[in-house]
Image (tube, rainbow, N blue to C red; front, top):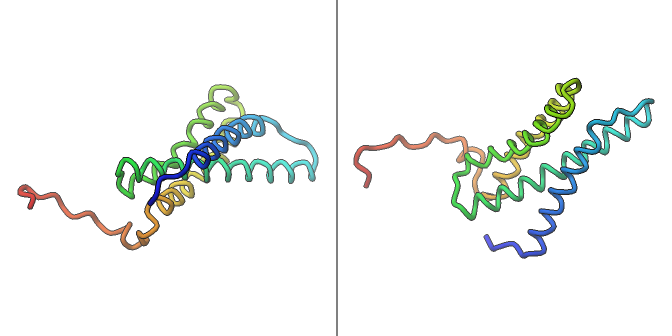
Length: 138
């Protein structure tokens, strides 16, 4: 896998920043009426998708660069705990609804990160058991 260009790294970083700011701006607002709620849900889901894909790409880059195991890529979903912690501190009354919305895409982000970092690895190879440790390695 080749090193991504500086432009691509900058675009992913900008996507992370703008989607995080968008989530922090969108989630505390509650629209009234049927059509504004449909638009609100569309905006929140697209912002969550952008945040998840940018964080998965960032985590996959570091997983390949630092030679992390494919199982460690599922930790990429933990990035959603940052905005969840922000809303827990700033808006504890609506925390549960916001937290449920933020933690749903966490598993998909880890899955996408694993497929970006290790595209040759199949699901069966990923789910295979690790060999047991030995006292006398070869």
